[in-house]
Length: 226
Image (cartoon, rainbow, N blue to C red; front, side):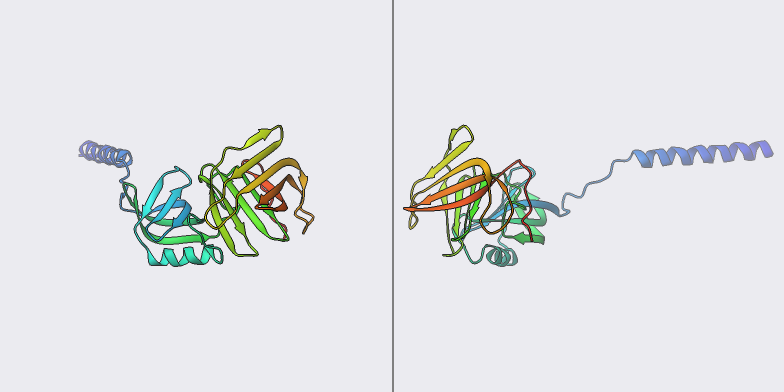
């Protein structure tokens, strides 16, 4: 009797172990409909809402979303112009190249410290205040005159490089004169703080010259002093 009971318990024990092993080996089911996080560069125009994923570089078409459009408008203000993008983190479902937004984590004005789409240089200056993002990945030179609250996208231009000097030029666009920016690897500051940058910049827009500094992608980004 004892021997029979022992054998029965042994069989039950091994069956449980076998079932446990099978449960551990069962692959986890992935819910394809679960929201996915997309972090990237958001651009909204009257005809389309587009976001470029920083991790994959893919460009997704966003199903029109009124809340996203409103947040984008706040992030680009007060300077809004065609092809201007902002930094965004959204959650949604992907079907092919189309994204349906389920939740919005962040929509912010783009700057050198939050953008995840590469740029060659990000230039800026004071008195008057201006900035210029130079990005081959973004296919353009993005200029803003902060004082005049105006901005535009110039066509991407391959720079002329001589030693530690980069020169970018772009022809005039509708309502905006031609620009030229010369960037040199040398210590510089923006004239309003003790912050020292590794690059200087000189912008020529029309007949006006503006001095500034520059940050290069891939090098440590100095956080602005507060």
